[in-house]
Every structure is written in C-alpha cells, then in structure tokens.
Image 1: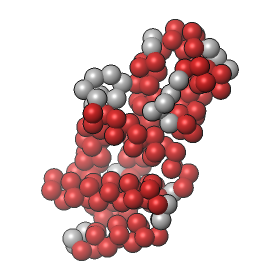
Image 2: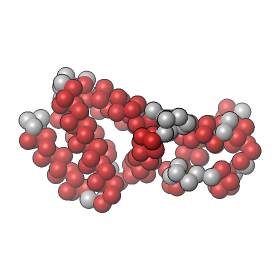
Image 3: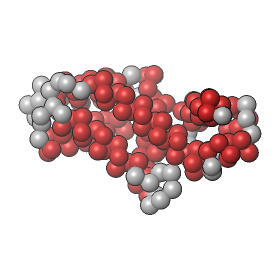
Image 4: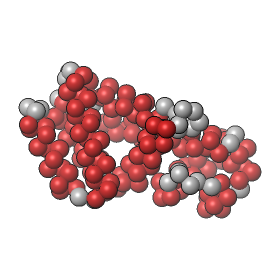
Length: 174
C-alpha cells in the first residue's frame, strides 16, 4: 500500500505544481492521476490530509535547496538562494509555495496552518548559519521574499536580480 500511496502522492504533487491547491478538487485530481476520490480519501484520510501532505512535500523541496546553500557568508548564501529562486524550472514550486504561504496567514487550523511561520523559520535558520545577526538575516529574507513576489508577478529576472545585488552591496554584504 505504501508504494501506491507514495506513487499517488508524487503524481498529486506534480498535478498541484501545475494546477495549484486553491481550487483543488478530488475528482479532477483523481482522474488526472489514474485513481479515484475514494482511494485518495482512503490513503490520505481527507482532502485536508492530502493538502497537508502536498504542502509537506513542497516544504521538503524547499529544505533540500536550503541544505545545498549552507556554508558561506550571508552574501554568498543570499546569491545562491536567489539563483535557485530565479531559475525558471522552479516557478511552479515557488507559485505553490506562495499559495501555501498566503493561505496559512489566514488559516488558524487545517492543512495550511503554520506553513508560513515554518518556512520563515527554515530560511532564517539557514541565513543565521552564516554568522550574521538576526536583523541582517531578517533584512535579507525580506528582500529575497519581496523580490520573489515581484519575479513571480512579472517574470523579470534581470531587474529583480539587479535589485538583489544592489541591496546586498548597499548594506555591505558583498
């Protein structure tokens, strides 16, 4: 059963990356991944259970990135994170992340609850590993997140990358 569950979760994640989670309906999802709503409910307990698992998968992908960029100074880490964020192949994951982040800001419970806070803590932990103080880490995180929102809205990699480099230079981080 675990192999089938893992396979359906992998397929559901691919579906969510393409279609998002906001309007996720089990019938179209099940049809797209060769299953049934009943099987999905059996394996994940509920639609919320499935969404929770999909958000956990998105967070795991985010944590894998963060593990790859550990070990440098604040500017190095910020540049590495930005290079990953700006890569076109990550747009679907980042859009899904943004959806989860936004929904969690208004959800006191359910599958979205705590997602934004957890991701902030994840990112701050990586930035703190550089030895920078909490204020500098918070500033860099805010700049990265703001530039990411702009990038997702406009697709303008050149301008947003220039802004990241400019702010890092202005605050003496490069």
